[in-house]
Image 1 (tube, chains in turn red, blue):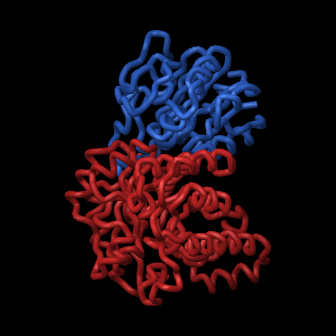
Image 2 (cartoon, chains in turn green, cyan):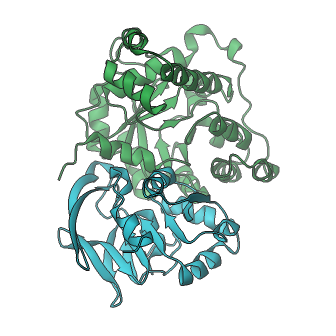
Image 3 (cartoon, helix red, strand yellow):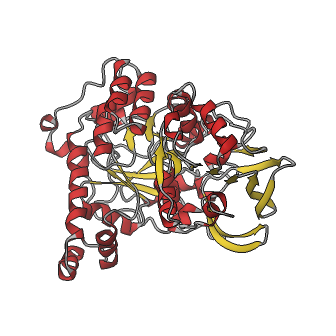
Length: 293
Length: 187
């Protein structure tokens, strides 16, 4: 029996496809998320919009809070560690968290290196703004990639930018000759084999989800049509006026993303979405997506 | 043509297996999609999510049950849970297509997921293949008309009743077409 293979980690990411992973901060929210049809919940003390508003250092959540959520729901439970903070990741693995998000939403612990993820049994998800970043994370052992977007902004513009960038860079790789692939390998700082596999298959070797700014069923449909295989919704649900209804509407929107009538029906019943931020009004040094590369 | 229930989960991996076997395939998202198919796959994913999305349409459950009277269905992981008679969880629907009882996530959380080699013992066929168990369920009770075709550590992990098959593991994650072939081929 082999428990450590990369395939087993990617296997869970495969099972999360066509689904919604929802940020929750307590047992009650976790139950609402599960009841609405979430495929997984991300347990964290503060949702990104509040982390942004509160400032200060943001760390791994209290393990007791994560444990309570694990006990309350039957779906997979994810939790975040700081970029490069392998000891937080070890703690989360000891807690048997189903997926570890090495996340730019928390304050980075290491400005030069991400967690070396291959030795862990628990799978990791990491954010990316472009193909190079995605492949560096996969090379370190990430079993799932998500766009960074701009977490807690309620603004989809950055997630769109990142998804389109990744998809178009994959397209470019498909048309590269051997010499050009070698150059890409140097430029992106990843092994040539990884570059070659993306070039041959026309996709990442792990699933590719959208995150960062999704607030409505139409945002969900947009990201799925741009190539996302699932969505993470952070602040968008529990910062809205109708979390329960919105959570379910976004679940419906992922499944029926290519059917505008279904998106319309899912949108009717909703009240106001979260207010959201204009990206240009966020000071440059407070952009979460700039953390980690 | 074989349909793959495409509400949530890794339905595209099953499409790839069907392509490999040379079958036409289509995604099934509502009861009307069942009309022109000859077999159905219920893939892995989250059974709670699939339950919620099936319940959106009033007649979906009834349609799947009546489809099962005439055509073969293959369920993997979450699909096996839905096909069971009972999985003792009110968040999950059970179609009762195969006379088994199942328990969700019975091996524990993701760190207990694993790949392993399984032996198939079915009619005259004896072979072995790789399978992935991802937060897998366990079959806790097998009815008298159900045939166990694979065991792992003394527990049934693949079963057959009539023309239907269900597995607690994922053959499709290993690009393994054997079970699909048994279910939709000539045996």
